[in-house]
Length: 77
Image 1 (cartoon, rainbow, N blue to C red):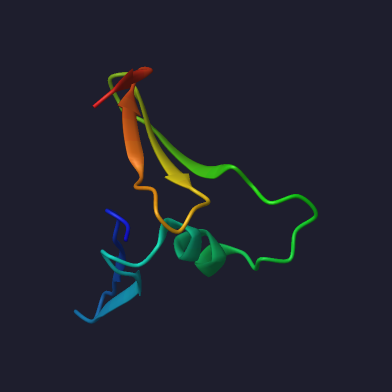
Image 2 (cartoon, rainbow, N blue to C red):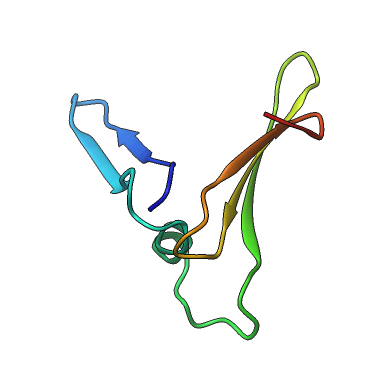
């Protein structure tokens, strides 16, 4: 069970939700790419650089049971 949700709000007011809370983190990675890669990934990292220069990283583990985690400038939240 994961702690992440991915939503895509559309300009017409509709909402597409390719990954809901509770679905595994592994499934979130499979939503973006197939499971047909040479070596399985350890995780997916989504990084955002803020206007103030901070680095926010979301780590999504390639695992059915682990939760995603977040760091800001290398510090875990």
